[in-house]
Image (cartoon, rainbow, N blue to C red; front, side, top):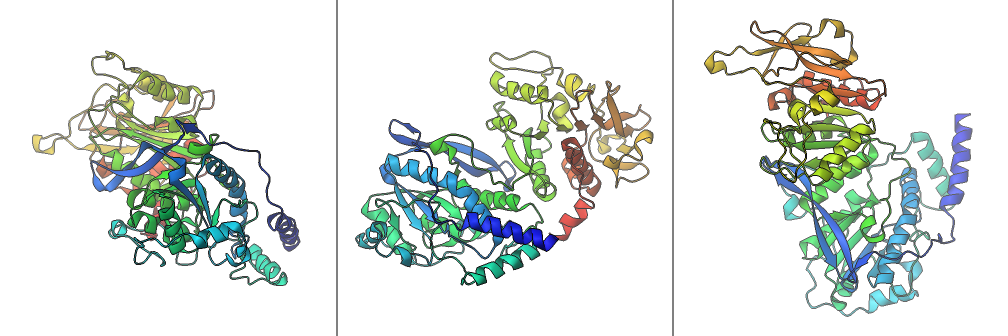
Length: 556
């Protein structure tokens, strides 16, 4: 029965995917300001932790359309990976609109289906590429693959793609190759041309040659290059016309991050969702190669999201400096949450800057982790937080988030907004200072243990049965406000115990978790990593993977 279902699915879908009629789309016009593309270029810039941690930063540039080229990388009509075919056909509609808009504004569209240009031998777009005059500044290796550029030399590549990246179900993969062979195609390399879902116009160019691409750019005085297509970690980066060659040789190049896909198998390190693998490669590109943009910069509307990308979006919001969660939280998210979550970030590591650009990620996030310290934000930014809470979305708070938007004297600076009662209103805590933890001054260490009523709670699975010592200073948080339910308790010396971690499940159904732990030392403890992992999954209503910490450590 299972094989029959697979055959039926393959038969129906292959009819769809091998259709030869071009996909028809409504005319789309580019969004222009003063006749220029307005692009939001996102990069990963170093935080105060240096190269070990980065944060997303966006700068705006205006590009003249007639000084811009769009290169379409390897959007073939077929592929040996069944899932890759699905995703190519899924993104092709949005990509065609993107190309139509860019072309209509005056940009050059270059179609580059590698090893598949022969079917276009007589097409005006192919002839145009061949007739471009030879440039007198042709880079020596522009006709070669580029596997690394100097800015990548010290980087750790974020995924293991040594298996080729196929993520097919084995049975589906076998049937797909049988179908390709039956059609007279080579199952290992079945592509013959660019997908017909992308329209090629006479004013375009067709070439898979780095030399011809360079000649076209030089002949038209084009400095700006936008890459779209597949696969990000292989051809998009490495082809002679790819990101590395363009960046290395001085072109102003960007990747359209929602119009691309990777070849990555989640069975390989770091054992994350396929689309998280794409996110990690995009982050690598933003750190070491070039900025990225979204298709919505050019044509508006929501960015493309693949049909099989079912990950809930988790926003990691950081604006504190003492505990360096701008370093520890992203590292934690990369290691433990990429299997099931689409993680987005808004990070500010400047202790004197109360502005938090990027907080707009809360508008589309399904859940959030907050690590903030006494931020007096612009009113419109704090409203984003209020809206998120009012929507009843899951929330995880770490350490100083108990006083995230409160000033010490409960005043509000001019032009700023505070939420003095955020701790009480949302987290249902009662922060009123902390105990000392100076061992050299005789302060006793903080001892933590599971609350007696929470010993069977799965959120604290993996914690020692008795007391254990943590480096974090103990916050004075009691008494909690109903309906908060304590999970962990802490004490220093003979002082009254204080709640250290708890959950809140209001009648409306909003799930909230908070812990006053969160120092750098805490993030190094497997128990804390497991606690925070469990909390994020619990808040989102997802079952946490078993032994997540052990699984990820095995891949290090």
